[in-house]
Image (cartoon, rainbow, N blue to C red; front, side):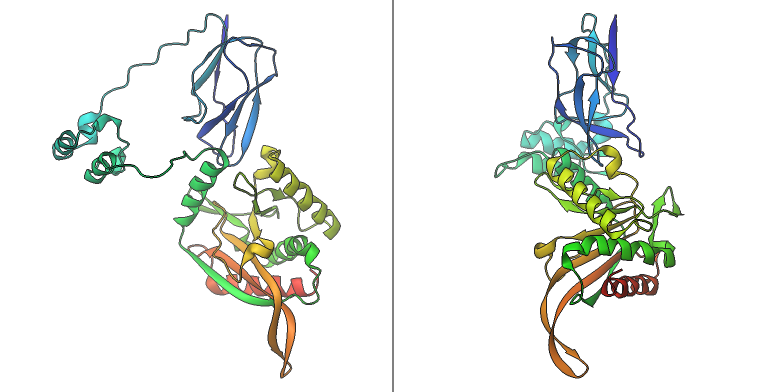
Length: 343
């Protein structure tokens, strides 16, 4: 008796996953709940335990392959013979015009081996010419967190966004707890501006009454956004401890899937690397993100005098389809006021 393990539905509307790493090999004896495979999604990398005990008789999907939910991944027990897949229906004629196929023949390109970039996967003339041309440089496939980030930011960049920027005087602010302060300031301000604490789902704007704010963390593997829960009700010390714990887990690659899901808003701060100002991208499907940029001594005019103050820029990038520019600006000013007051 064999057990056929298929890629499960991991929630959050995910429709596919990447086989990041097999934790077993063919012929290996495993027990139920032994680590089986790591699956990378557009949220995180999840370790999946084996649902059955027995011998790993057949691994059907290789590392690095991206497959839809429901795909047969591995057979445990039995003789290792998975059901034969149905032969694919050839759609060569539908994917390339006679002119493109003739060009491919002239250039010695196998038209069936090309991934088309035209509508519905149609192969274009440029696809053929690109395939025929010499390939320069070292090539490395996008995998794992980098692939997730690539796809996630591609979706975000398609949204029409506007970025508002203003200076903030951080002279009286303890910069060691800047991110927790910003979490608190944003959570309180989002109560006043609920349209920024929202997401777009299936053509609807969903206004959320919880304040679970993501904090962008740059790791060696790529950008991840763990979520700090209940930012409106927790103390500054609690938020600080949670930010540090999540950042450590992000760098160690040990974040749990639930720690990357369900954010309502996002804060991004790169510390010393933040620059005078950088263009932030939305954390899809959220509709707004706050950026904290480099804080440094600057000469400013205060009460008619030129003085040195600790200044930094604060930005709000927002989905202009659902948020009015003045409301986004007023939200940003509210956050700045609370930051200067220590939230």
